[in-house]
Amino acid sequence: MNNYIEIKLSTTKEEEQELLIALMSEEGYDGFEETGKGLHAFIPEELFDETKLKQLLEPFAIAYQQELIAPKNWNAEWESNYEPVIVDDFVAVRAHFHPSITNVQHEIIITPKMSFGTGHHATTWQVMKLMQGIDFNNQTVFDYGCGTGVLAILAEKLGAAEVLAVDYDDWCIENSIENVQKNQCKVITVEKADAPPSNKTFHIILANINRHILLANMEALSASLLNNGYLLISGFYANENHLLTEAAETHGLQLMQASERHNWSSLIFQKL
Image 1 (cartoon, rainbow, N blue to C red):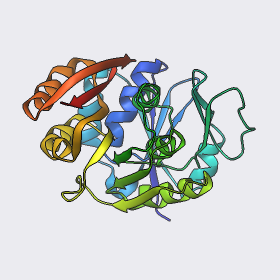
Image 2 (cartoon, rainbow, N blue to C red; image 1 turned 180 degrees about the vertical axis):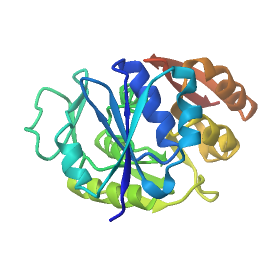
Image 3 (cartoon, rainbow, N blue to C red; image 1 turned 180 degrees about the horizontal axis):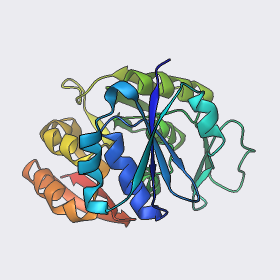
């Protein structure tokens, strides 16, 4: 096990913490702890770049402390701070050590490892919320950038006939397979990939990633979508909606619905 660098950020604002988690995740930080005094972020020592950290934090004017720490049990660390996520009475996402949540339509058990997509982040929460308004019954679904597999699992629970979930990260693949099995899913296939498949088409595509990947793959996503199918995307800020909408419309997709939570946005397009 390698050493880690712990960065202690002096911010208690929820929206600011969510934004920092998203930005720092892109720079290699793979563990976060929200405390009453601020946000703690963790990164393997060999990936740490203090110059990049200062550039990232400059717009926020946030002070930080840096500490070299020895290897530790990260799963146990996260478990101690992990709380269930509940989207109205629609779906609840909990860990195996939480009691069952019975007053929702669907319950998902996610092992709280370091894969992105536990439902806590505003983007994942929004996508789950928007999935409630789409008919998944007997539909084929593609989950692009599956993280923990939570969206793929919800798609099966909503009646999907077949779900392909892909991610480029080995840890995410391992975690998704584990969570698929834990939720006793039968129609989900998990594969390692960094782009939509060129030989398959789907009724519904879920893509909770980030603006850059979405823009770079919008043509491929549209090509992978059947006529009248839905593309549900998230992982970008509300003030970037026009960039995604313009790219989607260029490739034959029409904006049907928009959602915003803590400055993060989710959009539903339909291929008409």
